[in-house]
Image (cartoon, rainbow, N blue to C red; front, side, top):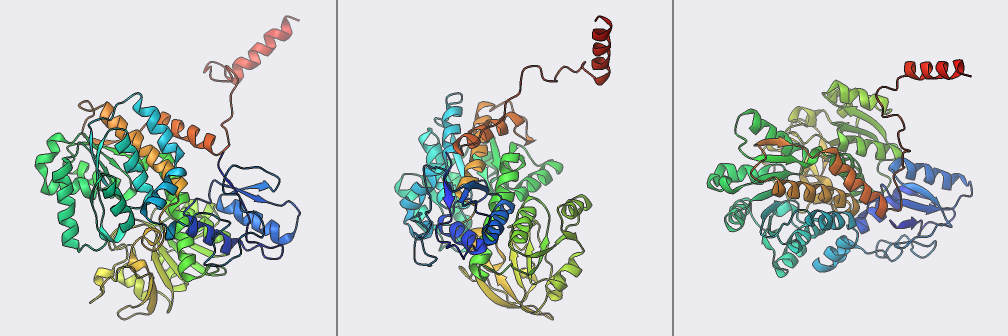
Length: 509
């Protein structure tokens, strides 16, 4: 059963959901969304407010007499102290590489169970896989599991997204690693090419289509042996779609991002949640309370973020160029407005599009003095920092004052990079468990269908999603419902046929 979490450091007069959520999320890198939260049912106003905020966040409030198997925080045992563990929970930020990787692996049962199941049907021994993903403990679990399944695995990561303790530990475990947090841009480029040359991948697990495009542009001779690519992100699927439209996509690509088990959970509940709690960690637990927040882009990430900061008391305006997305925001209870109007009024602005120059220089110039700005999408120059003369990124800088030419001084978070993975621990462990389950589904599909899958974009079928979801429900202690036999799937059984049947029955009586 998925662990239950009680309100360990909350006294009877201090039910502070904002502080609790930020602390638990940032310390443990465990998901709050989809979890049960154990709490009393005494009707106290403060407790009920906490219950409502937890439910709006995506948690399942559970009576305090419930039982669990893991991670129960007992009242009064964990004071709210930055140096104290939360109810004895593992603090992933201060562990060494192997401890952090082992802790992540202990809470990623879906990927492990699914890969075990799939490799009984499709043997992965001998397949060469190059992985280009953010290199942190959850990714390390995917690499470990693929290696254990018999694949030859190597990984590349940009320096700003590399957790050095993880890179070092993976090397010790015999996995090829081309990643170093201290690399320059040119060293990273050469490292990526080295991985291509060393692994000569048959399958690429990609993030933003960057690694496969590098192969196509600088190592085209390797494409003859490339069976296919499994793409993780929205921006990557867009890039491959552009390649396909230009007639340049000569290999199959599985759009992992388009699986509901990825986009509907990783983007909405993973990125949406951890971007909020990372920004709380930087700006303060109650930074969103009463704040005017502009969310630019109302895809799954923007929606997940907007719903959660509203639960924390923010007043949210949504900006989206797609009228359908803007209308959805209105039906979710948010004001949809033009970006110029929203930015001029906002205390906090987030970009959630994955599109270059979403926040252009002219937008920066319209922002309020002292407003905070962050990216929760995550591509280069989603904020037009390249249009600011002499701007230099500072590695590891969580927040700084940025003087906009002919505009205000604003507070820039995480140097305009994806805030949750550059200034925080990235998406939660349980959420990445679902995403990586989709990845292993895609990898085994590519290997099983090698030589028969045409070049171009492909999507996994609904059965793959259902298979993952069934495992995920089971490990959380929930279940899918059942249907009785023959309960309405006969297409001939219309309301008219039913009326006729009753009429004939009555005539015969």
